[in-house]
Image (cartoon, rainbow, N blue to C red):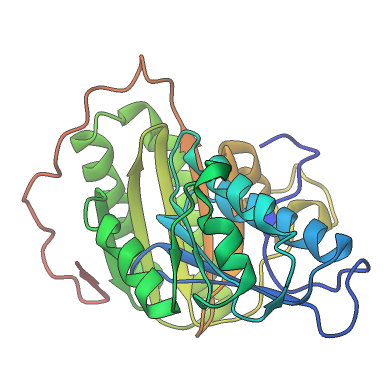
Length: 293
């Protein structure tokens, strides 16, 4: 990432443009790779700005899909329709991220989105479970390797081994070293600061790799700009996040229902990447401190 670009830390900060009753939240799901955003309250310019920024940040993280829950949105005139349609177009860019909306069928906004003359073609579902099921059906096609680990430093070698297998099988060996540095740093941070069980996922993306580390601690990492001290001293706390910032195309964090996910993406030119292959069926030996799925 650019040195002046902050990480995408999607907590729930205060938004000065929003009034009482307006809420924008986001939650990630490690197992499916989906992100669910909920927008509620009276629709106005402040809520539009906040929701648009949140959706763009969600899409930067290249989730398997984005579900936008609008059941609590007060928009009788359908003025927000253009934003949700735009979000679908943002998600359609490479790498493609499907975007769907959840709305009661009787809501005026649902009628606006369903109009054929708009050409928006935005999938609208009546309930969150229905929308989630539609998106989840598409995630089954993802090329993804997962590790379930205990918070012990000995598991870092398993992380490196899984990543090496992924990069070899997917023709992405040029990404192995930077990706290994990033992923082991994120796992080491989870071991040190969260101290909970840890889930690690490496997912093939058209442009490269998506790395994700989930733990049970709701506290977010600090941005590399928040760390004081001499950046030339690798022993100081926070130095590793500077490495993550420098090595990734983008990185950030988002809350889950039980903690958080910290993610990073690494890109490689398509001309450099070999044709992707299905992961070879050679599972790791069952480790003492982790399990593989």
